[in-house]
Image (tube, rainbow, N blue to C red; front, side):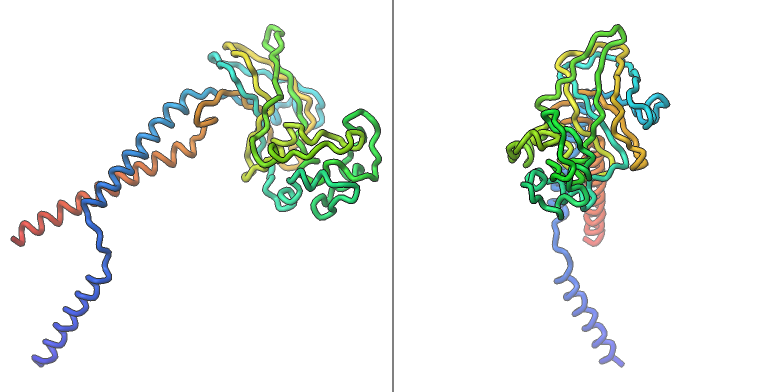
Length: 307
């Protein structure tokens, strides 16, 4: 019986030694310091983002739900009010919801090099919009008639679902606000690899059209905004009127469309997701540091009692 008890004790001791070898060998104080540094970093960045985010000014209007801007209305007008001065540069975006550019066929047909193919084209890349008839394009860039059986330049779903609403803007007193559509394209692979125009009499749009380049910068989510123009003057408080050529039908997608007018800073537009991520990260690091601090204190008191 005694041998059995000794054997049990030896097994328990061996087990404790093995478990000690396999247990994590961290130092509590160093762990606390690391989490305190991380918590401080996330907190400081979170505060900076909060300050900069509150400085950004934005106003939006969802005109697709306006009774005056239903899909069967070709031209509509709406107004919005600015509560404070928007200092230039002011940016003018369109925003879409439930329009999914991340669909496989969209991604396949998003490279302008493939869409500007020669007369043979690439049916796999362009499918199901290959010819001018498929794209419902009849007039070229030069204003001449397009051959309906010729390849659409560019072809493919992405280019041929280009957002084509256009806007004009003025004050309530009738002063026109110039919407500058130059220098609006993303500096991405399209902007650095724009193919040469082949034959403007066969193209329905120029390949270096900046609205097209922005549209081909595909959005990863079903809700996105894209830059349509910028305003190079201050916008004082007051009412502004926007007239829309209402061409892009979002009812096909069960979606909606809005215009967003706002300013930016070093961190871009308002990004509440990034702000929340930093603040949540800071909170988790503070909680973890406090947890290890309590653990160190508890272990210290335990050792003091044993001594």
